[in-house]
Image (tube, one colour):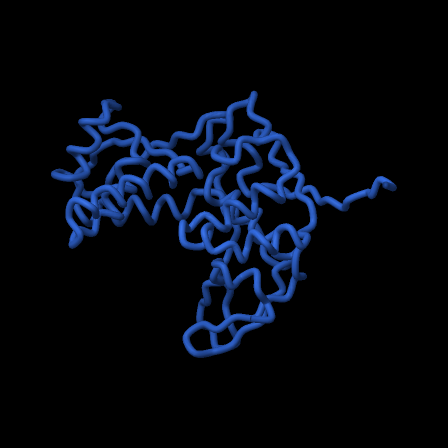
Amino acid sequence: MTELNFPTEIIELPSKGLVYPKGNPLSSGKVEMKYMTAKEEDILTNQSYIQEGTVLDKLLQSLIISKINYNDLIVGDKNALLVASRILGYGKDYTFNYGGKEYTIDLSTLDNKTFDESLITPGINEFNYTLPSTETKITFKILTSADDKKIEAEIKGLKKINKNSSPELTTRLKHLITSVNGDSTEKTIRDFVDNYLLARDSRALREYIKQIQPDVNLNFTDDSGEEVAIPINLSFFWPDA
């Protein structure tokens, strides 16, 4: 059979690779991806993957050519790869409904969020923050795909114990905070989140993380001046649905 040349694209990561250790291929700040084929459309319609909530991860793993550990990807870089895969698969124009209105956006015009590179020690995914109300000094990390899987598994386990519980926020905080006043033991972090982290400090921390973490800017302002968030879900890949 004649060998076919398959088209690929190099995708620039929002993080520029700065949060990954120098020996990690992701530290290059670039990932090579192939164009979507019928094989990937099979992945998108796989009911087992959809029910497990892993369909988008399976899609990206199939499209990425670079020899990387997928679980190392931070969330913002993964978002950039999802946008790129949508463009490579179905084109740049994306139509969706938001708040009862229909919008069409050119995905190729989306920019990576600007972030303060001086806050990052190259190769180290850890940041300093002082909680504004209690002045507690903490460090935190930007969550990776592997962290998200651990969080989802823990939440699922907690809900089996108590179906009425809603542990999403505190569980996420326990995984992203890496030390409290210099103490990095898991027991201290979990005790702090459960018993000492004020709601106003929790909110301030989450807002700060949104500001400084590398990501794609998935918001745009419509003609009326309203800020609209572009949804990334399974329907993102079915423009004709």
